Length: 97
Image (cartoon, rainbow, N blue to C red; front, side, top):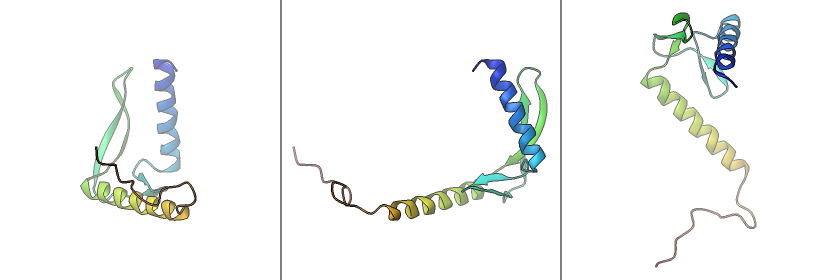
């Protein structure tokens, strides 16, 4: 993918997010959620240096929420695949040198 192709793809993505009404939201754990903070960030077209959109900008609380939800999802996934034959039940002890 060339530089112009990447820019075009980025523009298409911004247009899709805008038409879906998601520019004011963060994508966390498979859902579009309103951020806890009110910050915004400019999306700039690098070829023209023009601001093409403003998107939601998360704050520390948003990051904490995303990490918490991601960790919970990981725990649920791990529980779906319990240890079985040939799979370690936990961290393996390293032999002493």
